[in-house]
Amino acid sequence: MRILLLSDSHGAFPKNVEPYFTQVDEIWHAGDVGPAAGLDYLRQFKPVRAVYGNIDGTDVRKQCAEFLHFSLQGLSFFMMHIVGRPGKYNAQALRLVQHHKPNVVVCGHSHIALVSPGIFPGSLHLNPGAIGNQGWHQAITALRFQVETGRVFNMELIDLGPRGQEQPMLFF
Image 1 (tube, rainbow, N blue to C red):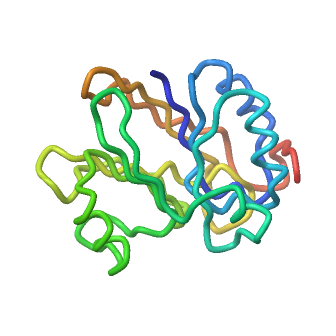
Image 2 (cartoon, rainbow, N blue to C red):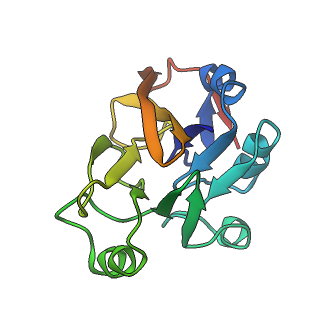
């Protein structure tokens, strides 16, 4: 199963991300989608798993949960927008992660791409950075990886170019 992980679109996607949509089986969005039209845009390409973020309104919150806990290819995943980073999870996220004990924690919010060991032995923490044009980040990033038979592999940080007005964007 090939996954494209996005976060923090804030209502905009770079036009050069579209070829990546056809190269995966699912698109995951770790919150701060912007208008719900952004979800509709993603769904025209592949199935989408998404959580809402702190900037998302009721249109997105009606379609997305605050967090997701699911199994895929023998692994347990936990996705929530605001988590923190390993060793510095916020109280709510830490409580939920300790309860669900996932193999992989997926989050967004920081606009900083991070792939690191998780808080449990053998676990993984993933933050794709920000796919949108709004925020303080310098580069527009995403993660692409594969999940198969209890393992995550072929992890790739996709750098889609600098954030700014020179980047051709689709706005919702």
